[in-house]
Length: 254
Image (cartoon, rainbow, N blue to C red):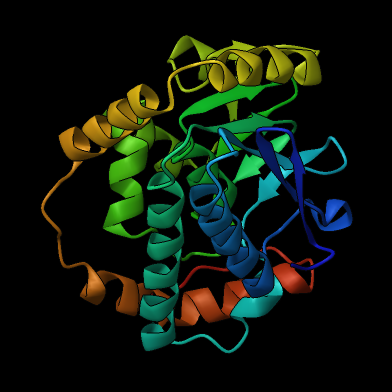
């Protein structure tokens, strides 16, 4: 593991903490790898009954992937990246035990993807959810990620969030059913939920998760041409450098 990703087991609960608070817990490749390893650990140890995801610092869950890692991207690398993200989200979704995301502050981009494949989401009143790439980087999401968001938020709200690049506040997130609880006492609510889950029948919970996975399974759709076009564009390359230099991107549509 890395200092940027803390993994701690307390009894039957394995907690993964995204630990880059100064960068709003933006994910590095090593952090993604560490998360996959935590998933393997959760499934391999029968003493672990719940996997918890949270961000350090109280201001962000995860604010996407670290933008500095995008500077050398082109179309094929964008395709590879989206495949990597889909693999990571798929592995997290396939964890046999319940996964709880405790969101405080920003839950953006890749962070929204991670929270969305958790089984239960709670948040504090300052939480904000979204993928504002239409006004920041000019990249895109894979169809697999779009499918996850559409399933949880509905197609209309997903389109609204992505096309307008707005952030969804905590109140809206609970109203639409994306999160189960909004609370000032995230630690207390998390303790209640994990307490219930650790006392429930493991095979029953696995059967519920596996049944929902199969129910929500969809035929794969080839989106490589879409991803390659966007990540290979001048707009994306220019926007990455604009973001890193704290400038507003200029869109050319190519």
